[in-house]
Length: 250
Ligand SMILES: Cc1cc2nc3c(=O)[nH]c(=O)nc-3n(C[C@H](O)[C@H](O)[C@H](O)COP(=O)(O)OP(=O)(O)OC[C@H]3O[C@@H](n4cnc5c(N)ncnc54)[C@H](O)[C@@H]3O)c2cc1C
Image (cartoon, rainbow, N blue to C red; front, side, top):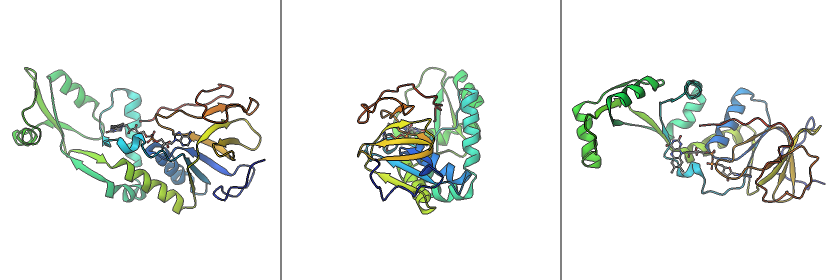
C-alpha cells in the first residue's frame, strides 16, 4: 500500500498528476513550465532527489545561436519562439545578460558558422572588438589566414541555476508541486490508473505522463508494472518492457 504523502496532490480521475517531471535542473524546469504554459489546468508534480551538484549548476549558460543540423535549427527556431512569451521573458530577464563574442577561425569555418547562425547575424569583427578581446585575454593564438567575426548584438548568457529556480517557483505558484529529497527509482508504465513512480522512500505516486529530465545521472528503470520489484532502489538500467519515447534535448 502507498503510504500517505502530504506533498502528493490529491487524486482525481485515477492519476495524482497529469505530468510528473523527474529532475528539477534547467531541462526539467523548462518542461514543467512549458506544460504549465501549454495546459494551465494540468496538475504538475516535479520530483528531484536534490543532489545540488547538477549539470545546471556547472553550466556556463551560453545560448549559442549556431545549429549544425536541420534538427538543431528547428529546435533553435522553436526555442527562440518560446522566448517571445512575455511571462517567460519576465522570469528569465533578471538572469540573462548579453556578452560580445569574437570568433577567430579560417575563412571556410567563418562562412560555415555564418550559414548556421539562427536568429542572429555574423559580421566581420571591428579592430576595436579585436583589441578589446586582446586586452581581456592576452595575445590570441591564431593560425595563418585566420580572420575575425562577431555576432551582431552579442550573444545571451543565462544563469541557468537561477533560471531553473525561477521556472520551478512559477510552476509552484501556479498550483504545481515540487517534491525534493526523494529519488525516483522506477517508472511503471501501461497501468490502468496511469504511470506509477516508485520513490526511494518506499512511497509511490501516479501520473498520466512522466518526463525524465535526469540530466547526466542514471535514469530510473522503466517497466511495464508486471516485472519484479527487486530493482526498486538504486536501479540504473532499463528493462525495455514498455514502449518509451526518448527525446534528446539541448
Ligand atoms: C561545466 C559545464 C558547462 C556547460 N556549459 C553549457 C553552456 O554554455 N550552454 C549549454 O547549453 N549547456 C552547457 N552545459 C550543459 C548543460 O549544463 C546541461 O546540458 C544542462 O544543464 C543539463 O540540465 P538537466 O536539467 O538535463 O540536468 P541536471 O542539471 O543535472 O538536472 C538533473 C536533475 O535531476 C535530478 N535527478 C537525477 N536523477 C534523479 C532521479 N532518479 N530521481 C529524482 N531526481 C533525479 C538531479 O538531482 C538533478 O537536479 C554545460 C555543462 C557543464 C558541466
